[in-house]
Image 1: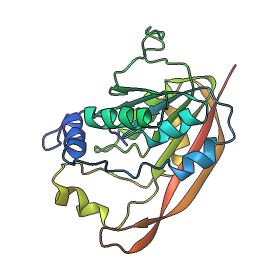
Image 2: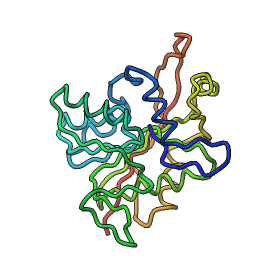
Image 3: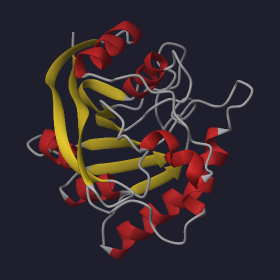
Length: 237
């Protein structure tokens, strides 16, 4: 999970520094190392190709994709996260490329970089798992920037918090990371509306659902929360 928006308002910490602090502030991985179940369900039947994982974190999803034949590039704001992802891939004998980058300005090496397609990457699949902005009214821009990397006839997968767990409001403050998010409820149809509103390409929904998963709170008590899952196909003319 990553936040491509740079801080531009008083009182909002810089995203790069905040995420690096979160990862570097622990000696161990902060995520489970298991791939996102919604991602596995959504893309498991797709033919393998090139994939960009935006906000790859410690690399669990990217490693799973690479193990299933995908040519994987993962980007994240945190150097520590990227280092852990590369180390985890190497330990499993998995080949994947990881890079410290901000999707709002990143352009893959060798890609077209003209005025019409400034971030065109030509990936068969682009995934963004739990990309949430901290400022209001920026999600459409975020979705649009991520979608720019999808090749014609490619796909975009967005997995987002449809609701935040009840303990999340105070969690970041307690950890001292300054990563509090501006969060509005996310739905597949809502994200699709943002996608078609901010992208010049034509899109269709292949999968749109709310998916319930079990989670464990800081107090060890089980709970259930819903995730928004959108798989959109970029239609060729």
